[in-house]
Amino acid sequence: MVERSNFSAKAIKDLEIVEQALSGNDKAYGQLLDRYQDSIYFLLLKKIGNENDAEDLTMETFAKAFNNLAQYTPNYAFSTWIFRIAINNCIDFIRKIKVRPHAIDTAVDFHDPDNVNFTSPNLGPEDLIIKQQKATELKNIIKTLKPRYATLIELRYYQELTYEEIAQKLQLPIGTVKAQLFRARELLAPLLVNKNK
Image 1 (spheres, helix red, strand yellow):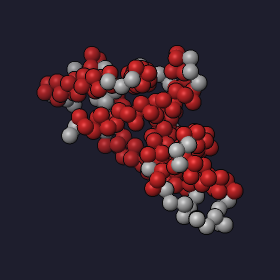
Image 2 (cartoon, one colour):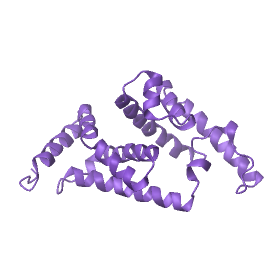
Image 3 (cartoon, helix red, strand yellow):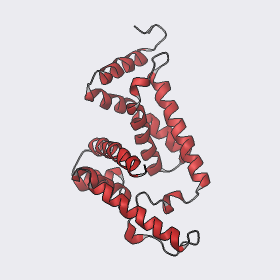
Image 4 (cartoon, helix red, strand yellow):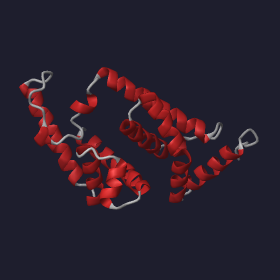
């Protein structure tokens, strides 16, 4: 049993919810999301200054936290742990932007192969062909997901709709959109890893 005397009431409640999540209670994950999503989002927004990037990084933070929840050791508050994940995520993101200032504009990951920019001064003909092939491969991998997940990926990354716009278009609560998009990314990640092996 973890010594909780140094924990605040909120930290004790967090620990109880974490224990419920680890014991298989899916609703507990939603509770953790509700308790920290706004705080983490506003922290990241302050650091990055872009709403869409802050939203994406917030969901990535929760993805990493939930995937590694069993590694959380309650020697310190859950809030400390998840905020550390958010900050590390933010630092990684900023490093990538500094290395590739136009990373979002030039990323192959979620761009339509039909709209590859063939006039890019940074890419030679071979690079452009490789880029187009990778984009096509990615689209094919996305098509292997369940239709609802593939649709969410399409709307978010190809059509670049906001969470609010997706919720409105699909007539779903925004929380459902975020949760299902999180799940879509989670399902997509191993497929991309296997493809690159």
